[in-house]
Image (cartoon, rainbow, N blue to C red; front, side, top):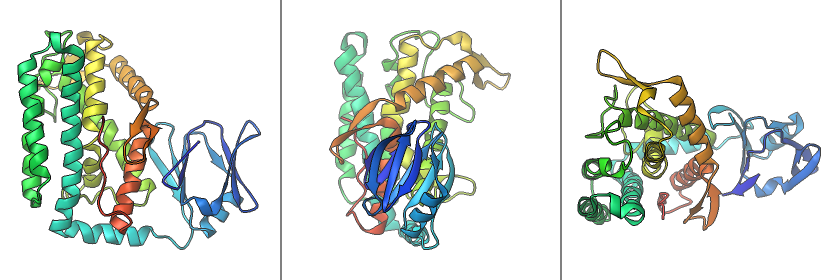
Length: 343
């Protein structure tokens, strides 16, 4: 159990939430683990095998405290909300803001700053930890280019310019991505980012991990009442979760990319786990997919420092924290959206 931004996150499997007076009580194996006055929280998010008493759900509904239920791995299942809900007001504000090109550019700029800064940190850490195995000159040049992109993003830029800077930074980053692979290079070559379908083992890994990120971001946005389909950096397209794609940008480098690199460099995935179809598409075996899912969930249990909250949280809660911060920004409680920047 952990409380962040007035939201109670319950991840302990088998936990039971009930009402006692004006408080929310969390029990595990009949033992009280936490007791919180309802007026001190704005929402409850339950992961996996976590149950709530009907009396608590009604009590929270009366007091404007939404309860979201997600799978153990973070997939959104349902939300219990009282008759008077701020969600419609939040979504209406989201739609108005998304139609405003200038406001969209400001949110998009924050998202891209988070992504580019985290890409730069991935390269800097590689230089720090494996300089003797890498092409240091190319990596340092890419770090300098990403730093210049960050300087450009600090300026007031129209939305299309922000999107252009994001594309240039991604090109710079993936141009040197192959240098970060220090083991099994002959079986895991990387030339460029490709998808639909992925054409090599590395892109196959990245595409699968990015899919997991999108699902987690979508669940987090739904749990705070935002519409995952209406974004700021990614514009509306039928069937596309544009806001989830927006939110995942800052998580790509330090979570998905580094996990893929670790699996390759530590030889936890091997070439025999991939196959190529006649179309050229590369697919992973069930064994590789299972190993990837296990590694991803284990990574989400690790703790990481959040500079805006000034405390440590598990990586799995990052999606929900950032979704809450975005909702607060749209409501006007924050002057701008603070992206997660990995240090």
